[in-house]
Amino acid sequence: MLPSERNDLNESDAPAPTSRRVPTLVVAYDDPTAREGHRDLAVEMPVNLVYGSVPYAVMMTTPSDLVDFAYGFSLTEGIVESVDEIRSVRVEDGDGGLRLVVDLAPGRLREHLARKRAISGRTGCGVCGIDDLAALPKAEPRAHAVQAVGIESIQRALLGMGDAQLLNHTTRAVHAAAWADRDGNLLALREDVGRHNGLDKLIGALMRERTDPREGFVVITSRCSFEMVEKAATFGAAILVAISAPTSLAIDRARLHDMTLCAIARSDTLTVFTGRERLLLAAER
Image (tube, rainbow, N blue to C red):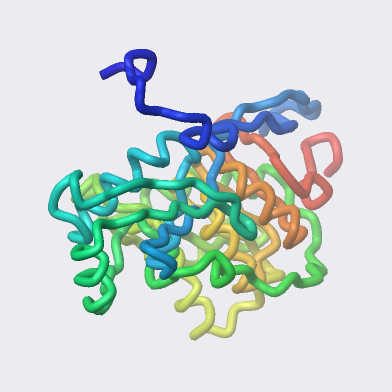
């Protein structure tokens, strides 16, 4: 059924914009000039699902069709078995996000509250185990004493990623996270079906080698949502390069942590969203 045909929606079903326009700087590796512009990013927002008055889970979503999301999540998580067991869904503003307050039929609510919550870690979920908005991850802001990196170093790292992704060559089904030194040489790379897992593996390897986070930058093959920025910031990295686009919250967190965030990184250009001061263009070398 098309949205225009539905008659059961209200204003609370779309409480926030689903995209946000941000300023960008598009840089070509072989061109000394940069092109200013704008790009529309998908909005990423934490949504806390609450049953009765008890928080259950925080999910990162685009804030549209949230009532639909509450129904579908409730069914697929096994909280309800049919639509009749949900009496109503209310969308509320929360501290740093939104709350979906789901009113269950009395019998179903009692069964839900009696059951111990257990959401297994998913390959696509970055906040598994969190049941309240206040517990959303946030790294401690760090002062980054990092020398500027030439964009040709980023290009070198990107070009080296293909040959280094051995598992992806075989499966075409995994993400990679890599660490490059300031010259763009890849020093470590880890792969996983989950983009968050791949970055965690990389950070773990760098920790074990006692790698100085000021001496290089992180490259990820996935889109860049907020938790990828948070993980890189927790490690202490000041520069994060993503092959796909970032979300709105990723931009906000990169600014909060004073990080340089480059995304939509290709073999010929990359787009700078935050931290332009840490990049040296061809004309600035």
